[in-house]
Length: 395
Image (tube, rainbow, N blue to C red):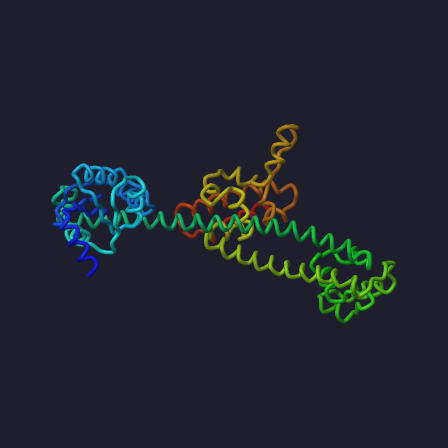
C-alpha cells in the first residue's frame, strides 16, 4: 500500500525514476516501463565479470556502474532505485541524487526473466547454452575467491593464536619464576627437585606448608616413589623460613592461577591444532599442526609461505643467526623453526643438514598444495619423507 502511494506521488510530480540493476551481463538502467535506457556491458571474460561483481558486492563502484549512473543523470533522471543495498550506498556517497533501496522491483524481475533473450539480442552470446556456460564459470571463480577469502581470515586467526600462545608462554615463565622465588623462601630445596613449572605449582597449591607434604599425595601427582621419598625427606629438614597461613595464602593463590593458565594453554594449543588442520591439512600432516601454525605465522600467511622456496622455509626463524653468520663469515645455520620436527631434532648432528633440506622440500610442496590446488597429498608426502630418511640412515 505504501509503495503504491509513493509511486502515485511520483507520477503526479512527474519525477523521472530509473531502476538500476546489475547482472552477469553488466549494469542496466531501466525506466518505469521496463525499457532499457542505459547499459554498461561487461567484457565477455569470466574473470573480469567475477571481479566486477565482487567489487559491487563490497560496495565499490565498477566503471560500468559509474558510466550508467552518470548517463542516467544526464538524461534527467533525479531518482535511482536499487535492489542492491551496497551499490546504492556507493552511489549515494558519490553523487547528490536521491537513492532508494527496495527488496524487489518490476525492473529486476523483468531483467532476470529476460536475461537469455537479452544476451542474445545484444550479441553477447550465440544461444542460451553459451550464457549458462559463462554463468557457471563466473560462479566457479567467485566461489574460489570466497573460499580463498575465508581461508585468509582463518589464516589470520592462526597467526593471532600462535602469537597469543607465545605471549602466554612468556607470561607463564615469568610468573612461574616469581612463584619459585616466593615459595623458595619457605622451601628452597624444592626448586632443584622439581623442574617442571606446572608440577611445582601443583605442589604449592596442594600443600602450601612444607610440613604437610605427604608421599601418598605426591604419588597422585605422578612422581616416582624414589623422588617422592626425597621430596618428603627434604621438606622435613628444609632450611627455609617458616611462613604462617596468611603468608602462604597469596602464594597458593598464585599457584592456582598458574595451574589455570597451564590448562588454558593446553586448550589453546588443541584449538590451534584443529584450526591449522582445517586451513592447511597437507602442511599439518607433514609438519605437525603446531609447527605448521608457526610456519604460517612466521611467513605472514599460507600463501606467502607457499611462494617461498624450500631453502627459505628451511631457515624460517633463524634470520638472526643467518645475518650473524654472513657478517662474521662463519658457518650458516642449517635449520630454523623446523628443528622442532622429530626428523630434524632426533637426527644425528652430522645428518641434520640433510634432514632439514629434505623436510623443507616436502613442506614447500605441502604449502603449495594447500594454497593453490586444495588436493590432499599430505599422507603421501609424509610417507615419501619417512622413506627417504630411512634410506639415508641405512647408507
